[in-house]
Image: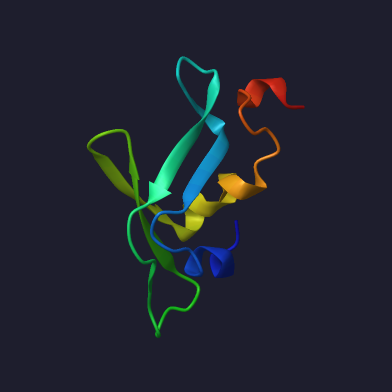
Length: 86
């Protein structure tokens, strides 16, 4: 995901990462965008995206974390574990 794509995210969109696993290594790690991405006028190459996963876990994705993430709509493996996709 690029910085420009991260700036266009909206609350409620799902992201996934094929390199991080959950469910004992069978499924992609999924997070939900939990708010509006934060940007700065003086630092246009930085972005912070608030995310949520599980029941209570929250965090943020920064510009240097975006490389492994993509929108769930772009996921090549709907309803399949990530390790089954080549």
